[in-house]
Image (cartoon, rainbow, N blue to C red; front, side, top):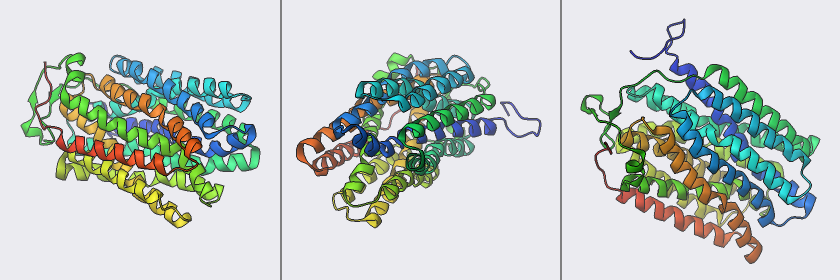
Length: 411
């Protein structure tokens, strides 16, 4: 059995999974929790929804810029120094938001936070998949556990940040969140390490039977990203991220305007991430039955149908029904979009491929909260914005269904 083992004879990859779980936990703190700050910022400065959303747009632009570079780095060097630098930059950017007095300051500090946070997802997902490459069942479980960190982070931090805001004010809340972010990543860096060398193998389509694997030399990155399957995957991922980013920012203010209390709206935002956990865990089992491609299609279509429910939101119980359905489907999608990349392209350039798909999605997603705010400011309601998201997601589901099954790209 390749790989390192701890003194207790436990495969060290599982310790790496624990470290990567902590890494993705911080994404639940950043991606899912800005919506909790939305109303306090709007009320403090009398900013429009478009202006407040532009701060989060700056965060996502910074995130997208750094994620591609980090993908290339994690393919070449140990993840430990990347995690340490990430923790310092992102934590500092978040903490500096406590000193905001203008919209440009908010944009700048959140941009810095985004640059720091960018490497986290690429480092966590690609590192785990490398450690467990060739261990199909264990690898699916490891990837599911790693990705659940985002959901757990949302479940924990959205209510916690709301508590900080209620008791200490939004400025101190930003400061505390920045400190917590850095502390978690420093702890993770102590545990995480680079995987031992693996024999690159190519997997045909959704086939997960090790006996049917065939060695294949890795293709160039340029050939991989130009392939139709990669373009299709990127399109589907982009549509899903656009939807997620719009809701991550606007669900809480929308719910409050529909009569839901601020505390309940924050809890719902956390539960949206929390309910993604069973979806992430189930994703491996579903893909065993129908393959990663169809799992991805099912998840994205489920997200579209869930948003339809928001058009009729009337009270807390309907909000919680939405977060249950959307959260599970969102969770189902995450491992699927990672697994399908590994299946078709192997692990030699996994970091940069995940980085590219995510970066393209985040660049588009960066403007989703801003455009949602603009639509709401222009029309006075959220209906049109939600309908647009439904159409985009439905189109992505169709793309995922019609993507052609093919042999992995090889050089």
